[in-house]
Image 1 (cartoon, rainbow, N blue to C red):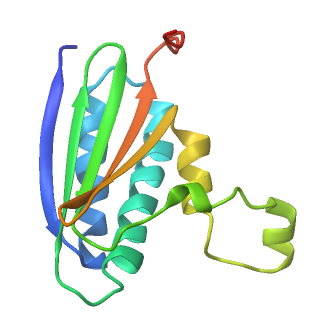
Image 2 (image 1 turned 135 degrees about the vertical axis):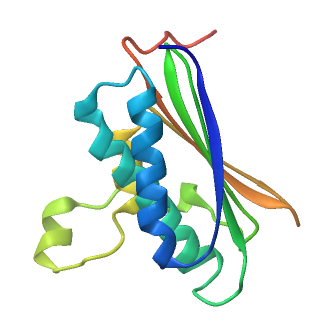
Image 3 (image 1 turned 90 degrees about the horizontal axis):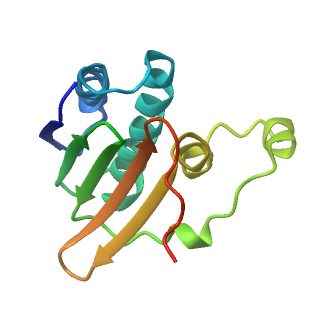
Length: 147
């Protein structure tokens, strides 16, 4: 399988989450990723986009979410961009799952799930321009860190 590259742009409405899931499924099936990772990656992207709709645009302000996928034989990369409110993922700590369940919390696991599923979760913000979230899953062995 060769390189895969495509993108979609949606407006910030939860009714488009199904469209995002279908797009991701198609991209994953065109890549070298194994099928058993498909649902997990779709979940990670779904969580990211749902968080953007709910928090970056606060369920009100109209805006767009740009989802771009690039994949080759070594990695599958999804870049999600929006022009909503700045987000600071470093301030979000991994929850205690037993406490989370005991408290019957239904929210607050999105970033934790992304970090568990993906090999890299990188976030950047450019003032007045956009938020950018990059989710990377390596195909085969994860490359050694560069010195």
